[in-house]
Amino acid sequence: MTDAEARSSAETPWPVRVVSQKIGAWVGKLGWVWVDGQVAQVVRRPGTQVVFVTLRDPVADISLTVTAHRDVLDAGVPDLREGARIVAHARPEYFHGRGTLSLRADEVRQVGIGELLARLERVKKLLAAEGLFDPARKRRPPFLPGRVGLVTGRASAAERDVLDNARRRWPAVQFRVENVAVQGPNAVTQIIDALGALDRDASVEVIILARGGGSVEDLLPFSDEALCRAVFACRTPVIAAIGHETDTPLVDFVADVRASTPTDAAKRAVPDLADEVRLLESARARLSRSIRGLLDREQHRLDGLRSRPVLARPATMLDHRSEQVSALRARSARTLTHRLERAGSDLSHTLARLRALSPAATLERGYAVVRRGSTVLRDASDVAPGDELRIRLAAGELTATVTEETS
Image 1: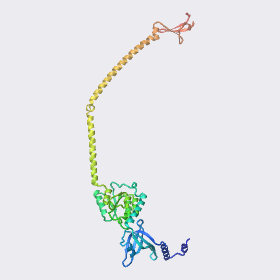
Image 2: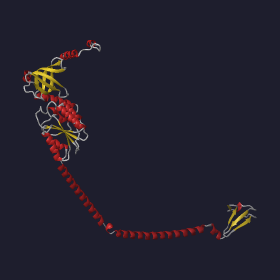
Image 3: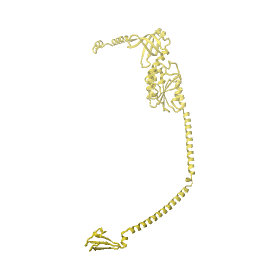
Image 4: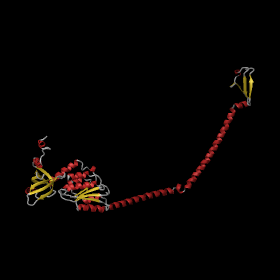
């Protein structure tokens, strides 16, 4: 437990004045510091030599009050205006009575163009290293968005250019316009809020961030790191049209599409109705010519097919085929008759040979077949007296008994 905690407890709390004094003491230990910021407000009260300057952090929504003697401010930045970037040598002071914190400056310097450009270059390298400029992550805006979001200054020339050119190209286009400050200390915060509102609107399919030309200081909000990160985080494609073609704020590198002017942004957001009608008419003409050419080729092909004899006189082919069929039938009949005659002749010859070689023919000539049981006898020695024999004649059979064997 620290000494401060030992001296302050629920039973022995510090009064508010003591706490305020302690805070003042702790703040005073910081000493003199150099602080960099954007001027959000300059207050010069009549009759006093103290000038109150509200410094805002360009990245975070934080501001501090800087007090400086009029001579100190006039010596460093004689014509200090809102939106300028300054560097002040100041010491933090805590006012016990009001409970407020401020910075008392004894030297104020305005950030020059060269230093601003150097800072922008450092931010550019940082964002590029993190991949915010990667072309692979850039999205193509839709061909014909249902609704276009526009972030621009109120009643500005950029707003008129975008709206007039877009509606001239596509009269039915719908817009949701968010008017913001496009320069000065509040520009970044308002632009980021407007981008978020449009990105959350599901009907908005593409967002245009537009501003007319201006000096490097005027275009500084569009090189703000916080704004670049907000554009990178948008889910809706963003078209950046800041300044003229030669102006290249950092948001141009982060946006999905960079337009050289607000008029160019309108051309990139919506198609030209007249051009699309001409393209459609040209496509219809090409399609019509292609169809007519195809029909002509097919008609010629059909005419050629119809002119062939097989289609012009189909009966001719049938007559020819009929003649072929008749000839084949006659040939088949002749061949079949010839083959039947040859088969009949062969059968007659075979029958004659069969009859000549048949045992029955031999029996017809007076021979007989003698068998004992199922055995055909060929030798008289194969039987003995008393054996019973069967004799097959040409007509019928006889049964005989052996009485005597002669050689």
